[in-house]
Length: 66
Image (cartoon, rainbow, N blue to C red; front, side):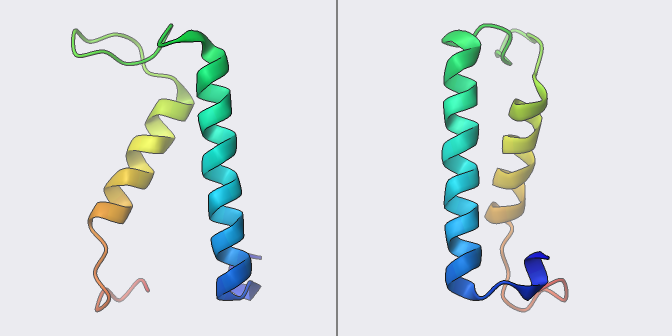
C-alpha cells in the first residue's frame, strides 16, 4: 500500500502517524511506564519511536533500500 502512495500522500500519512503517536504517549501520563535513564520499562510506542528515529538518522540517499 505504501509503495503505491505518491510523495504528498506519504508525507501526509507520516505526519498523521507521528501526531497520533504523540497523542497516545501523552495519554500514557507524563512519562508513566515510559523508559527512563534508570532503566524503566519501555512501551511498544517508545520502542517504535526509537526505531523510527534510528531509521531517519541513518538516512542515506544512496542506500539500496530507498
